[in-house]
Image (cartoon, rainbow, N blue to C red; front, side, top):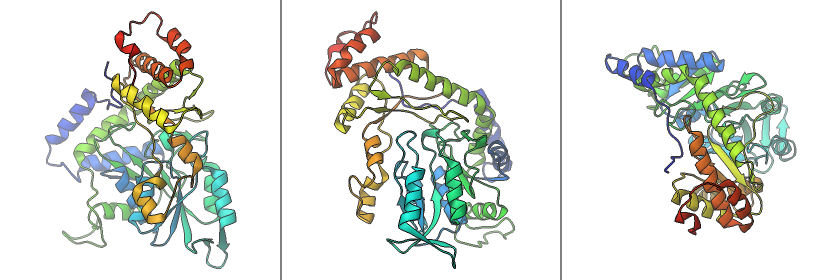
Length: 415
């Protein structure tokens, strides 16, 4: 059996929506762009949305529109896709990492509070928070809702408000996630979403900035279209801009996917619950948590191996799963240990120990809307075999798991 890591859920509704646009003269900057933006803003609960060609572009425009300047520092997490930190570098600011919490893999609010209160000082005259170690202004907080699990936004927002910090939410993995009856991406000045094919909804490629500020929205729309304004003359540019436009073809796909979003989120939650049920027998796997309140919009399904397993053990398990047709990945590699971050900032091992501990032991398993129970059973079976090879005491569990199953000669094959 071959099971991909992800697969978009495209129906006749999406195919017809895209085909209809192809029959019109408006393939870009047409009516479907504004329709998608309006429907997205309505769904998340903001006044405005600005659609762009990727989540990375959206992050870039979010910082630009909030006037994050060269030499500013942006507090964020080292456990994320690299774009959430790179966006600070795009505007010549500095990502200032704070380690994550062990329970939800999101930025640790206690550690962030400790950094602000003990390694910074607030200049009352200028209203600026200054990093004592670098003498740079700490300008913004950029929390990432990792894997669709909501950050603890109430204390984060309190910190941002008290110290006059701009709050920019990276909700690229969390469309539909709720925190205290509020959609994520709406607590700060700006929220950012992404619509890559493995996300909850897809536009093929795409992303969006959401905001309640007309000025931020105006700037983002100008930046995405080569710096033109809505009132500009043909080929007149008010500012340095970028080609971050999202076509009407992509937007039509997004509109159809938004129409099915509740169905999609329910499907993904069902698959996540199936996994938790099937993997519960393995004592040395930590399965992802469900929120005690609110809604988690599942982006990926990531398990964590217990402390007894090393990174090498994890990598051997990955190889074994792939050999048997189960696509899988390590999620995420620490941003601070990416080669160019080490070269640029001098980061080294153990700088953010919780991030590194988690990163060494996480495995993303196949996860998509229409993953069947038979496929989940197969993944669980192969995980049992892989764990048995990594630790012989799992042989007892493996025997129970595979009783009555014909595994063939391959079941005795080593990595």
